[in-house]
Image 1 (tube, rainbow, N blue to C red):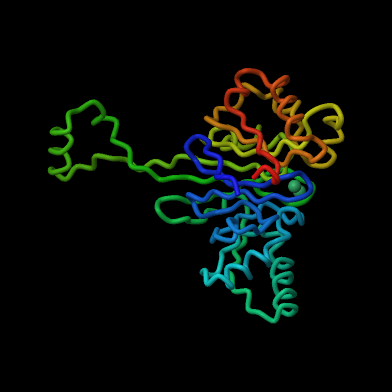
Image 2: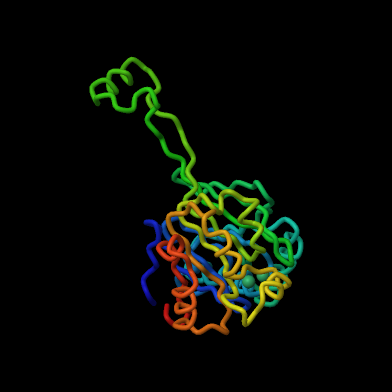
Length: 279
Ligand SMILES: [Zn+2]
Ligand SMILES: [Zn+2]
């Protein structure tokens, strides 16, 4: 298997093909977005943040849970859109009956605004995106201590003296590190600043040219490249990963389309996720 991508200093190990499978791992945060394929790496992720219940995003959850148990790993935690929580429990119960196994896991409902602690000063937060079924995007944040403004530029001796006097020398800040769009209409970019501001944006761009019109793309609840280009100036992200591209585009062909169509302001920052056979 190929090593993870490194984007804006963040390791990303991902497979995502529109309609077929999506599983996006952040090994450094021990999380995955969605579980459309529970390969050996994905099984190691103890927390899965689900965006929605389409099979290509959730279909391998039982394999994920069972394989972790087989390998002696701790039971996983699944954050599931609240609209799907009863059906999700029923699904896992059906597998327990079929497999005659415990499939131990923690299942938590998620809704826009839900925060989930990831340890080590990091947390995930859900937001609403717009798909054909209830869907959440996810952001990953880091809490950091930042020198208080009045101490910036002071000498280390002065700062040490302030600390020794018992003064607070830092303020806690929360920085958005990663945002994942899930499956969505482009309007999520307009409504959710986190998608434009996170250091790394992972966004679905399912269709890349007029083989599928913007209107047809929208009727399927997805993002078209035309719509991203129309918002090229909105993205403040350091790096952008395009995922979920339709299998109708070969990888070389998709790269060629991006090379021809992306404005320089995006071309410098965009990475196209390679297809699974390249991973
Ligand atoms: Zn999808
Ligand atoms: Zn979907």
